[in-house]
Structures are given as C-alpha cells and as structure tokens.
Length: 203
Image (tube, rainbow, N blue to C red; front, side, top):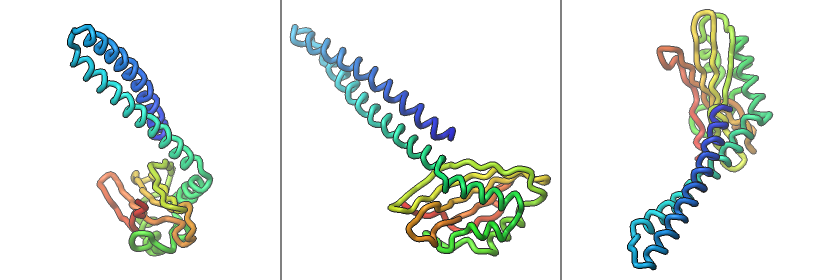
C-alpha cells in the first residue's frame, strides 16, 4: 500500500511541476521572441523556453503514468484473490502445516520446476520455533493476457528467530494448473535458507 501511495504522490508532484515548467517556458519563449523581433537577441531565452515546454510535456506524461500505475497497484492489493492467497499462506505458516502449504502450490510451473510437497515440508521445517506472528505485504505484480502473478513478502516472527518469506503466486489464469505458488524463497538474518520454484516470466 505504501509503495502504491508513493506512486500517486510522485505522479501528482510531476503534474504540478509540469504545469509550472509549461507556464515558465511559455513566458520565457514569448518574452524572448518579442525581444528578438525588437532586434534584441534573446536566442538563449527561446532555446530555454522550448526546453522547459518539452520538459513539461515529459513530466506530465510520466505523472499520468505514475497515477495509472498507482491505480493498477491498488486494484491488485484490494483484489479478493490477492487477499485470499496472502491469508492462506499466512495460515499455513502460522500453523506450520506443510500439507496446507502444499495445497496452495501450483501444479504447473510457468518458468521452471514446480514447488513440490517435499519442498513445502522442507520450507516449514526450516522455520525454527513457534510462530508468533506472520504479516504480509504485496510487493509487486505482473500480468500477461489472463494470467496475473502477485509477489508477496511475509515477515515471520518465531520464538527462535525472524524470517522473511518471498512468494510469487499466480492468482488468476485461464489455465487452472498455473494458479498457486510458483516460487517460495525463505531467508533469515544470515541470508537465504531455502528456495523452490522460479519466478514466472510474464514479460
């Protein structure tokens, strides 16, 4: 949510900046052209006026793009399937249930080996101690045609340690076998603990 809101703020700032640059560029351009007509050479002013106008157009375009991206990111974060997947994985981690986690793994991989039942069991076994809390955030998404992949970050606190679980999960696809966990990477404070599957290439 925070990253999505940041995109919106950046977009608004760019649009405001584009308006200011456009106004400044037009004033400078008009003033310079009038001075040139009166035989007072203001070539530099004309050039800089044109540059400001061009930069204002570019800033406006990028500002609109940021706002559109913000809207897309918010739609993914608030999507029911996105929240269900995040909740399901959190439950499997909280209860340290490898069978439940395996149920949420995709049966087919888009870009590599599938995450198997044994992988889910190894991942759960790698989390030492009793799980005290699991919190997740959506860190990104990608899509192609009817397929949408959401990237999650799960912050896990146990009685023994703290872990971060990164998951790439296909929440929507015309091919049911693709829906589920495509990649899972568990890390502790020292680095990677285990990783299974591969991030889907939807570009």
